[in-house]
Length: 463
Image (cartoon, rainbow, N blue to C red):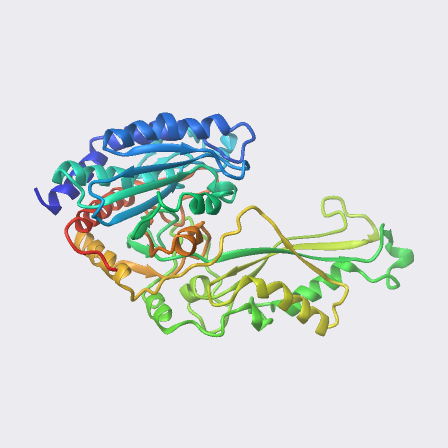
């Protein structure tokens, strides 16, 4: 038995329907953590769905309550072959966003897998039940082929990622000894393009903030008072325009990196952003001038206006409104510390004459910080070599994703190198109705992971 046999075993699990049968059970469990009554389903997913399959292949499973009392439970599953062997930590989340049952295409249900052509529909099929299930199936294929892995494995499953992973950092600190490992390798998020494998080495962080202008307690007739009373909507619009220009360039330069590191720029040179046929068309004129699309979303910081409210938008009245509000967001890389952002905006607004604009941080549940690993480091290069051998393709190495994950728990709190290998694509309707996986991509993902797990048992690991 050899590497090719392990990859073939993983492929067979996909093609003979046995992997699909596992997914059907897991998708059928309505683990929407955003729903108030989801608690029993979140616990059932760990205890009744995941634990039996993991125990069957030699894992010891323990389920723990959330230490904050504000989120779902955690599972630690450990498979120890030899205390002297290195340990792989892997991660997944079994919770999903809301099903949005009535908004799916006719004949589709979020809690039932439906195949149409090369698409497999179902809530969680890519985020994240399908991805962590594919990795565990590949692990089992290697175990069945070689009779052993050649390394130890610890799996951390959480059930609150879609509501910001409350308690994950506290849990990791309290269970540091059980989660001790040499590397984190997991799968979440999408590839940049469907047909090219990707390695993602970290995440951007996200900071939410509110800008507000309030002049008075109520509106006043625009005919009698227009031209006499300052309009807060106009003031706030101009304040925002002083922060970011009409073409998307951030004008407050303390909010963006001074530069993109050379190793990051070199890695992003081979990365391209393409949402596929269902994705939006990129506005190349928007954003930081002189950067490629990949550099804008993976190597730079962005300032977004998520919502803007003034007066009564759904039923406008003839009155000068009393206040205006904007919910904004900064997506940031490791090159700027988030604690500097709000002071920088306040300083800028004061100097620009907008003392009437207040700036306040917003707690949205997810306090995930930015992380990034050197794409030239030994772990990315080792994993990339394994992917090339399996697929014959040069994978894109992305220093950090554009979105966010609780990766700071692994990279900072636990001090691990982190590598994510996505088995999805950006047009998968993640978080929306009609979430789906592409069969060829999921099958290739299982083959990649089987090849990688085989290689991890055959060669020395980077220190």
